[in-house]
Every structure is written in structure tokens, then in C-alpha cells.
Length: 595
Image (cartoon, rainbow, N blue to C red; front, top):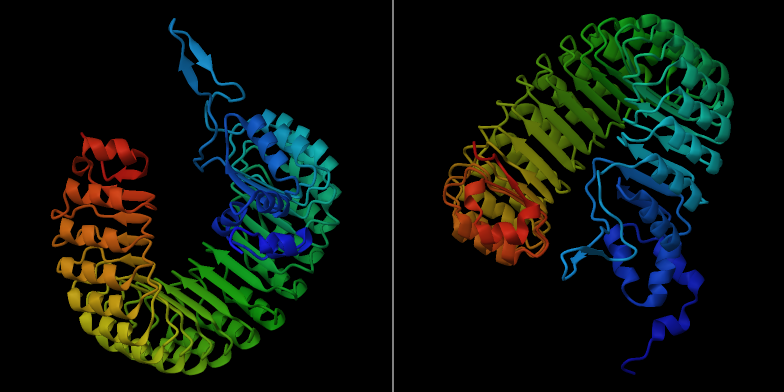
């Protein structure tokens, strides 16, 4: 019967709450809350995570959110985020004085204060996880007040907060159940703050991140090694730490699974200790090491049989022999990134292809010594490969890309940038063989043209495409993508000088789900093309169109008025009329300001 509410009459609260717990995206949950008052109330009860920007009126905001979402267990506050909060609206009386609306607050600077942090502790009684990203106004006093009220806290992220030893000591005293602690860019901390945390919270602490803390020394890591026996993840970026601290962690934290290091004064001795004592290691990332040699990788390959993720960035003294030892010894590797390791070449990659058959993601960045033979071996041996990233690899061309296409038919993501030997032949093979490909980026590969994109359009249904700087691509290639990829949501065709309105109009017809488009430096696209695209792509949220002489203030105004979901437009200031500025000034970003 029309007007009857069959769902609410049958379903109990418990069942609706269980359904809400399986709705992950925030827009979907918000939509559920608009169905009726009952669903709004139940959705508020089921929501356990809040993400907000820092506010100048934190007390009232926190109190409001705590009343609406009483079961919140995780709060993420990021001072870099801009948010819309209730502000004190002022009415002018006839005598010229201000009349304030009751219950509202005056908006000041955008930063969370100690009072706001204290309000978080007082209002969210079930809080377990708190993230404070670059909240620069927080002091030791605020952190102490919060810690005294939230004694069940399990995770604390203080990245970029200017807190000192006093605040961290309070956390150590009050939050005995702390499991995750991030202290990246907390420049005021010393050993006097971190050592008490290791001693008091060591039994439960599982993850620790320290970066740019110039006063934290080996003494803190020795305390971690002595007291944090359950530590599973350590991220360390320091110029102060030496072998002593890291060896202590390796010996004391045998359950370590994730180790990420950027330490200029750490040598082979430390990593050899990791290889001997940390047999559960699954992720190893080494950045900018100039004192590590192949002996470190020998130790890892010999004992760390569970290693799955390996990142080597700017490690100049590692060679093919070291990579071979890891490949042979760690056959469960699934993710490998080699970035700027100039002594690793074709032979090292061949060893990966022969031994790491479970490899699912490979990134080769600035690897000038790797040639076609190396990547071809990956194509022969790694049939489960799903993602491949190639950046500035001058020795890689069509031959190896064809091998990847033939052997890695499960490939879903292919990103290639400035690999000038890759042309149409390799990408045509991808289109013919890799039917699951959804994410393709071919930036500044100037040998790739329409033939390649026609093959992709016929064989793959893309969600993301970036062909910025591929000068040989014209209308035919983009039209093929438009007709073959109806689920395309992101497109970057910037710097395609020969692209015209015809291709843009085809995108409007064939890709109704398009959300983000970049057409900057496309000199032949005009108002006609962007206006048609705006009318057809109802979900468009972002459009970059600088240095497009054919697009005028008319085209900009059309996008603003037609695309109801638009959130960002990048354009020259002189192309924005006064009326468009008044209507949508908050979403328009200018290339430059008047000089």
C-alpha cells in the first residue's frame, strides 16, 4: 500500500545496525541517515570513526559530535584539512550594534587547542584511537589532560605536533594499553620522553614511528629493545641513530615484521643483526643508505624466509649479487621496488623473475642498468603480476613489454613514465592480452600513438588513464577509449596538442562516470567541447584546463553552472568572470595571481 513503511515495521534495530556496519563509504552512510529519523539515530549509533579538520571552536564541535556519535572509537584530526564549522553569525540591529545568534561560536584561527583536546578526552569515553596531524597548538598540558581521561587509548599519532617530553611522559603514565605510536616530526622530543613510553607501554606496544627527532638517540632504541618484546613495526628516519640502537631492537624484538629505515649512520652490522634475530620480518624498506653493502642483503636472504615486501631506494652500494641472494632466499616476495639503485641491473632482475613466482607488484624507478632481458624474465616467471611501474628506465622497450603482456595476463595496473623506447608495439600487446587492465598511465612516452590506445580501447575497460605528454595521440585514440571504457573515472590528456573537441564530446557520450579530467595545454579544445562534456558527465568533480586558448570565460561558467558536483577547477584568473567568481569562488584555483 502506498505510504506504508514495510521495512521499519519488520526489521529490528539490531539487524539494521548490522547492515550499517557493512556500509563502508561515508557518502553511502550519509545517504542511509537521510531515509528517516529512525535510520538517522541508528546510523549515528553505528558510526565509530570521525574525521575532521582542526577548529578554533573545538569544545562546542567536539561536544556536538560526541552527543551525535556516542560510540566513536577513532578520531582523526588533521590541521591541514579545511572544514566548514558553525560560526557566530552576526545580525546588525537598527542602532548599528551586533546581535549574535545564540549557541554559535566565533571562528578564529584554524588550530586545535589544548582545551579542544581536553574536550575530546572528556566527551568520547570509548575512544581507542586518536590521530593529531600537524596540530601545532597542542602543548604538553593539553596532552596530559587528554591522557588522564583516555586511559584505554590504543593508538596515538602525533605527527608534526610540537609536544615535548612532559606530554609524552604523561601518555606513558596513563595509557598503559598503547599499541601504536607515531612521533614523526615531533622535533621537541628527547630520550627523556620516549624511554618512559618504552618502559611503561612496552608490554603492549606493537608499532613505533620516529622521524626528524634530532634529540632521540640510541638510548631510546635500547629501551625499546629491552622492554618492547611485542614490537612488530618500526619506522625510523634519523641522522643520530647508530648501529648500537638498531642492534638492540633486532635482538630484543624478535617478532618484528615491518622495518623501514632511513639512517645515514647505520651500517651492515645493524642489518646483519636483523637478519639473524628477526626471522618473522615481512616488510623491509631501506632509503638513502650509503653504508650498506651486499652483506646486508646476504643476511636477510639467508634467514628472513617470510619477507614479502622489499624496497631499496638510493642504496648505491647494493648490486645484483645482493638482490640475487634475497630473490633466492625469500621466494615469498610479492612486492619489490627498486629506486635509484644504480648498481643493480639486468642480472638482478632476472633472478627475481626466476625465483619470485608470487610477485604481484614491481616498481623500477631510475634503473638505467636494467634492460629488456631483465624485465622479459619477469614476464616469463611472474604470472601473478598485477601492477608494474616503470620510470626513466632507458633500457626497457617494446620487447620486454610484449613479454609482460604474454606472461602476466592478470595485469591490472601499468604505469610507464619517460621510457622512450616503449612504443605502440608493446602497448598493443597489452591491449590484446591483459583484459583485466583498469589503470594505465603512459606519461611522456612520445613513441606511443593512436594505434596503442585503439588496442587498449578494444581489449580493456579502463577506470584510470593518463597519457599526458604523448604527442602522437590524437582524436582516434581517445575516441577508442571513450567507446571501450564506460567506467572511466579519471583522465589526463594534458599536453596533447592535436586533441580536438570531437574527442572530448565522445568522452561525454561514452564515459558518463567521469569524475576528474585534466586537459591543460590542449590548444585545440574549445568551449564547445568542455560545454558538451559538462552536460553529459553529471559526476564531474575536478577539471584542470590551464593554457587552453580555445577555452574562455564562457566555458568556465558552463562547467560551474552545469556540473552540480564540481569541487575543483584550475584555470587562469582572467577567464573567470565576476559572476562566476561570486558563484563558485571557493572551488576555483588559479594558475597564478596578477603581478
